[in-house]
Image (tube, rainbow, N blue to C red):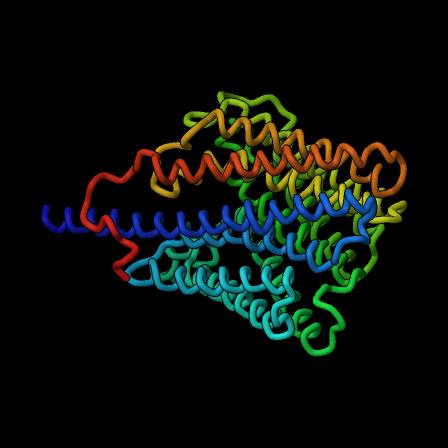
Length: 450
């Protein structure tokens, strides 16, 4: 009996170690796309725009390539990696299915970036890369669909009536994550269809402006936003010592977001931005972020400024919503739209990743804590300062309201670039030098055992 328990424990440790090593692979890949094809390309794009003093002086494919590398290559890799880590798996499926998904996803994102920037056989590469990304998401959703909630598993042996009576309502945080997953699938499908259309009849390798605007609404508010909301509703009550989310307000925020995305996709821009702004304000109240904590926030192993940066991130979300309404009414040269998207993607999404990532990623990856609390703080401070300068000066410069604002944009880009690379350095040092949370056990090179 004791030998059986020991073998079972060793098998469990080996399985968890394999999952942690795979997560590190996903995270390292996301960091690569974030730091190089994503942020570095964004920096060079902005420098080119500043030198021309107008947005139209830069190829649209370069701007879209930057966005694709950031959302698909960075955030998408993080989410898929965490998603696979969170799924219970047994036997060879611990490695083989996630690894197949990883190869499809990474190959698709990398080839798309090369084709967007260099135009290398783009008519063939675009649909192939988009097809690989869509196949990866389908594999991920297939793996997720095989697992049931605990209350559903416990009712499998009961009759239908008893089973229905035992089922509890789906937690709203899970509904938000599923909504984000649906947004991810819709986004990759949209991307595949348009890439195929461009390959067959397109005059250039860039999405047309009007279609790209609708795609960005789907990407930002249909995928990124509800996904972050779901994980926030799940983790923040424990991390920040705040009450559980207000279910009515959270449902309201999700419905406003869905309606806003639908209006945006159908081209009803002003109504879409108004609904999305309402949802951005409602989610902050739904999560009780303005209320006094009922205890001490969990900041062990991370910088104590963590709760403040989380609250600032949701403030940026509201700013993004209101800037979107202003853009729908007054934007002429893309500056207000750019400020709104930057407030959402950098001010909200990136700040949440920079704040919560050091709290959960080392633990999930098999380490006790992030390598440096100071690097965590500095990366967040630089990101926030750069985002503040960028969001406040982009609209003023692009729209010709205050020409001197053009001089602020390079400084904002340098600060954000530095913050991104400090975040990447901190995670890489954690993986290289951090103290492992696994005791010595058979299977040190678990990933090789497929």
